[in-house]
Structure formats: structure tokens, C-alpha cells
Length: 350
Image (cartoon, rainbow, N blue to C red; front, side, top):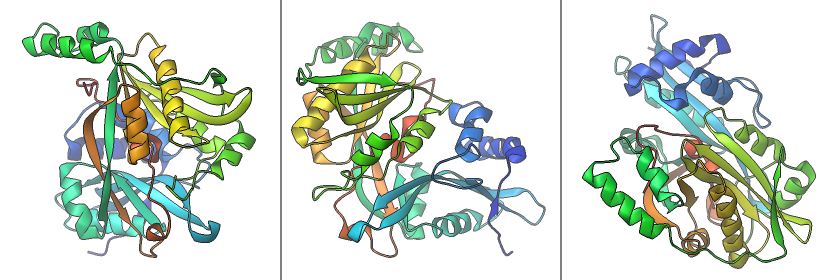
């Protein structure tokens, strides 16, 4: 049959949720809570108009496949703005052959660049067939901050494996952190300052790396995710704003979801030390996690006592060849759904 890409409506949210539950064989994971679906697909977004959720229906009108997108952009050659997207919540019924591939190709074709970080094993097998190219990985780093609270939060704390992990994590929690300049401070804010973030955004692409774009409104939208508790901070040096970071907490795990600072490797290392200090100040946090797709961020995290615990492959599709003409991508958790995905029954990386 001829498939058609159809944007969904807010009143169809429960139908979509039931479809995702059926395909993924899940019940009540946080990422499909009704309020989270509303936020992902329908809440006003500073970089997108209308619904961000799409379906293909079969001849009987039932959902055959679903796909949504997370809006991104980057600065291409000569300062050109390049639209980009991370596609999320991809699901297809086995009863409608070809519907899953169709929706991915059709929705992806609306943007200059597609970026995929991670994905299910099944999705990673299919992505190359859809024209996406593997390009590096995002390593997931973790630091333990409250090993005994972490042990108590496990499903079976008195199991021998949990006790052994507690001992190991107690040792890991003693790791040191990098120095923070005395003139630096982190200030919690209710919303990110638009003018200063816009100014910093002009410095996000350098000869060494390319970051996807940010605005204060974009960051504030991410912070409104109902699946996590978000904390926003600006970094100041003698009162002058030089960076910012966003921390999200999912259960007992905090994530350095987004961070940017003016300067080189030394400044990034100090910024991650500051973000780590702020995240660890939350008494509910047992573990802090951050991602690194670039060596200088990996070194910054290692200098702050983080250890590599997992990795996600990065794929992209770039028909016009924008990415080979810019520096490598330095991705953050907020470039995908990594900053809010959460499995309550298995919340830790350590």
C-alpha cells in the first residue's frame, strides 16, 4: 500500500502511548508517561512549529509506525544555519512491512542533517540500511557520590553482588576532582539569560569542534521535561558570565545534561568540576553521569573522578555534506533523549 506521513494531534496521545507499549512490550516507563509525551510531542517548542510526532496508518486506520523528532541545529560553512534532528520513539508494527523504514526516511528528509545517538540493537542494525553512517561514539562517564545511599536504593541490597558493588563504589567515591578557580562561581537561575547565552552560542563552533546550537529558550524547554528534576546554573568569573550548565536528576542519578564554557581544556575541566559540585549537593543524588564524544571532554571528566561505564554509537545522515566541512561534533546529553530517559528498576551505571 502507499504510506502517508501524518502528524499526530494531542487528543491521539493515548492511542500513541498504547502503540508504543505494545511494540516495546512495556507498561509504565517514564518516557511514555502521558505528561512526558505531551511535552515531547505537543508543548510549544522554540525551534519547531506544530506537532513533533508522526504516524503511518495501515489500510484499517490503525497505527503502523510512529516516529517523533528532537529539534537541533548547527552552524555550517560560512556561518550558515543547518537544520538537524535527533529522531526518537521509533516504533513499527510487524504487521505492516515497510512502514518503519518509510516513516524514518520521510521524516528525516525534512531536515539537513540527522543525528542518532544510541538506539536499540534492532535500530542499530537498520540505521545503515536507511543511509545513516556510524561516526564515533559518546562514552558515558559516571562518578559515585553517595555509595551507601546507592546501595540502599538497589532492588536487592543484601544480595552478594550489591554488597560487592557497594565496596567497590565506596572506593570509587574517594576519587578527587579538579581545581576550580577562586574567581569562579555557579549561580542557580530560574531561566537562562537570553542575551548572554546568545553571545556564547557564537563561540560554540571552533577550529577544534562543532557544537549544536543553543538558545536560552531551547535550554529552558529542555529543563521543563516532566520526567526529571532540572537545575539551571550560570558560570561566572568575577561576576562576568562565561558559561552555563543544566543538571537533570532522574531518581537517584544526576546528569550533567548540558554544559558550555568559554575557553580551552583547562576551563572545560574546571567547569565540569563546578557542575559536579553542584550536582553532588543534592542529597538525593547517589551517582552523577555525563557524556563525552570528544577527547577534551573525556579528559575533563576523568580529571574529575569519572569512569567510563558504557558507550553509545553515533550515526548521522548528511546528504548535502555539511558535516565533513565543519569540525567534529561535540555532543551533549540534550542533543538526544539521553538527559531524561530513565529505568527506575535499574537506575545506575556503577
